[in-house]
Image 1 (cartoon, one colour):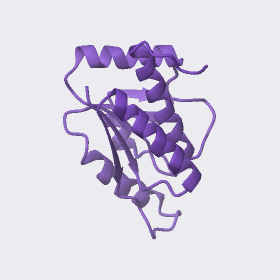
Image 2 (image 1 turned 135 degrees about the horizontal axis):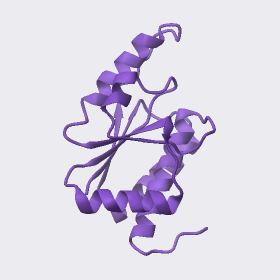
Image 3 (image 1 turned 135 degrees about the vertical axis):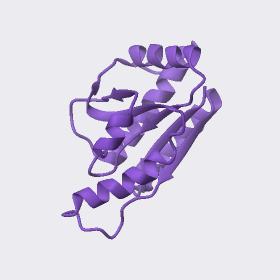
Image 4 (image 1 turned 30 degrees about the vertical axis):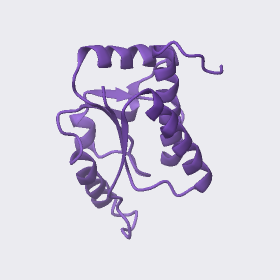
Length: 155
């Protein structure tokens, strides 16, 4: 199964970006994976939240196709790493659709993106920056793939 990861804009923090790139390479050794950085609403004042969310939603939804869409949301289901690995394994064995993970921008995800989701996933009840949550998602995908393949991963 192909994995896709979508988020608006690039990661600007160089240290986080370096860690993301490293994890993405590791994921690529275990499974086909594509990282798509979509259009980010730039130059729009934060007081125009709806416009920002709309611009970013347009860029994200262009990449859905017939994919199984998993949106990160504070209202999503929380799982342990082993539960997440079983979830991914079930997807890979029962579906030919790509699994597409969607991370919002600094304001989160537009409601219409959430409504198109096949599954809502929460990585924590805590709030993190959108750049950090990208890193956490990649780490959990990598951890899950190593669990699925029976490889050891540092605890």
